[in-house]
Length: 315
Image (cartoon, rainbow, N blue to C red; front, side):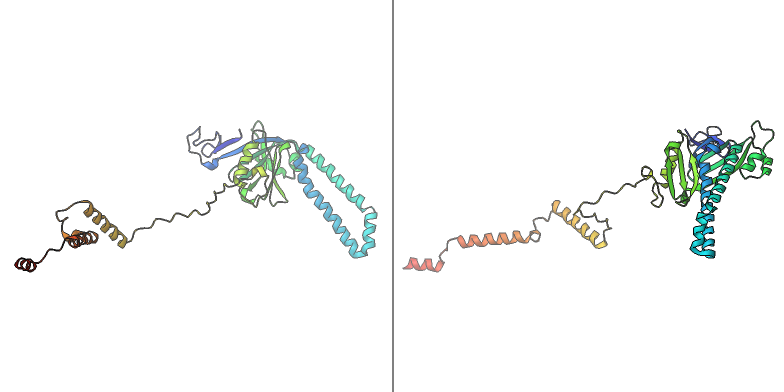
């Protein structure tokens, strides 16, 4: 696996984890990264030719356009037609062809180099090393031969650090994949290739993990669809479903009313000695008792007065 961690105390790559397996130092989350080293031969590497063409072709077109402008200003349309019908296009093509031959020879003399790739939470880091450096190899790479002073003469295989490039995730504008060659191309801006990263079959998925994690949610970055991370959508609320009101603290009057109701309920449930008092009866019970007494009086037969009884006897 390409995932490793860098221990600052040991100053070396160790197995990823929470602590360093060598010294026991706690490793930060940012210490884990995907790192691998590849050997590259510039003459057989397409990206080396791509870097040359990205400068050579625009320069050739700029020369052609400048010549057309100057001919148009000096002689008009006729002069521009004469420029195309003359030997100028042939000379320009011959010049470009000669430059390509010189570049091919320079690539052949450069020799092989080592590419150290690191993809971590901060971005993409590429460092280029030259094993067994010589002044000629440095000159063909447009480097000063004075860099030979940095080489350790006592090393079995001297290695010289040539340069390094870094690209942070916030500056990436487009990512393009080349699975056939195990290349991940990072553009910044979207029309300019900044860092080509060549992976191995073992580091391909690890590098894509960081790309998906750091750029998958950014809509402004152009990504392949399978690297896009979509945030989970919340379930829509049901129609007609009323939102639950937030609980509110009970006010002082409400608390007093609730306490009075609890006291009244306690009195009703617990019988007391004064339960038979008339003022404890409810109005409904009082009205019912009076109505019953009145009804009994109305139904009772009329008794004759004593005067009527005496009068009847005397007669």
